[in-house]
Image (cartoon, rainbow, N blue to C red; front, side, top):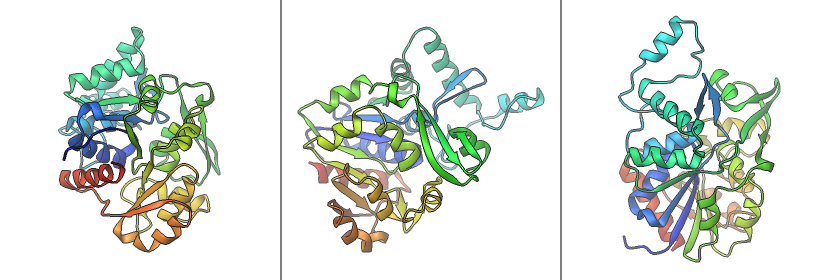
Length: 314
C-alpha cells in the first residue's frame, strides 16, 4: 500500500497496542507518531512503571505476551518469588524481563533524561523503528472515583481487580502538564492526514491524553478528521473494564455510548460488523461511520484494520 501523509495514533492498553502494531506494519516510520497514555504510570519499589507505554512498546517490538495480554513473552518470575520470600509487595507482578525495562527507565530518568528520552532509548534498543512517545513529560496520575472513595488507578485496576463501583475519574497533574513536544509538532504539520483514537478504554487510556491543556480543543478545531475505533463489540470489551465502567456510569454499554462520549471531537467512528445496527444512531450524532471487522486476533487482523483506517483517512 502506497500512502502519503502522516498519522497520529492515541493509544493505551491491549487494544491500543494491537492497533498500533498494525499501523506500524502498514505505515513508514516517518508517517506515524504513536502517543501512549501515561496516566497509569506509578512508582513501585522505587521504580518508574509505565504500563500503557510498555504494552505498546512491547507490541511494536514483537515481544509482548499475547496470551496474558500484558508483559513480555517467555517471562520468568524469579525476582517476584524472591520478593515474596522477603515479604515484599507482590500485588503488582513484575517479571524478570519486564523488570529490566523499569530498572533502565528509572536509571535514565534519575540521570536527568526525560520520559521521552528514556522511551526513545528503550525503543531503539528493542529495534522499534516507529516513534513512540508518552503523552507528556510531566507527571500525570489517574485516580478512579469509586463508591469506596478515590483510588490510584493501579490500586483499582490490579490490587482490587476493578471490583469497586466507579463514579468518575480524576487526572491529577493534567492541568499543569504540557503536551509532549513531538505530538505538539506533528499537530501543526501540514502533512498530517488524520488522528486515530485506538480501541482503548475511553476513560482511563484516552481521556488522560485529552485532559492535557488545549489538546482536545486543538483536535476539535482541526480541519483533518479525527477517527475513533470503538473498543466494544456487541456490548463487550475483549479485555479490560470499559463496559463495566460504562454500566456503572449509567451510560449505554455499547459503541453508541462510546460515540456519545467522544461527541464534539470525533468526526469518523469505526464500529464492528456486530454493531452495524448502531450506525444510524451514531450518524445522527454528526459522525461518519465505518462498519468493518475490528476484532484483532492475529497480525493479519491488525494490519487489515490498519489498512482500512488509513484508507478512510487518505
